[in-house]
Length: 254
Image (cartoon, rainbow, N blue to C red):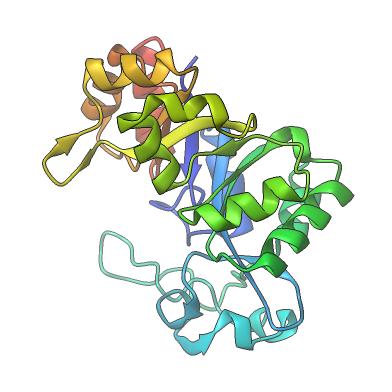
């Protein structure tokens, strides 16, 4: 079965990385949710993609310099613009949630969490929260930062992890490295291409599958592209638009 990940929730319909957006994605049939996390000044972990609030909330302050209480005052609907160019969710209570809220308000839901910093404090606090919610078995940790994943693995994280960018490249070009890779690294979560290099060819998928890796692509919002990836053997698809992509994946047999 091809897993459909709702990338920041149903971000095509609702303000990204908010509880309503995540709940809407589940209503639409997404198998799992994807989100991003940063550490606040008071040691809390919040679900937000950017390192500051400028784009998402119109607040030009770094997450690391704000407390959770301050961030809760932000309007997370600031950046969402609908097809008519309107901001229909402004002032309607959309907030940046904490990781603790997500884990507790969405029990049993599978999460893919991208650590957006290589801070050892973020890795440690992330692990503390996931363990407190007894959620290691349903939370996959991801990061572009190899150091972030190393920190987490060194702390004994019991859940799955994806490959960092550097780890993926070593797998692709130096497959012997896989013998020494962390056992928790089970997934290659990648774009369809990087520059002129195609990563979505049957040969690339076959090579990664031969290394016992699940291959999951981001961010796919075109149903025809989703169907093609399923046909090639993609194990997962990240999308902003589960309303269109879930039916396409299921119709393709994923």
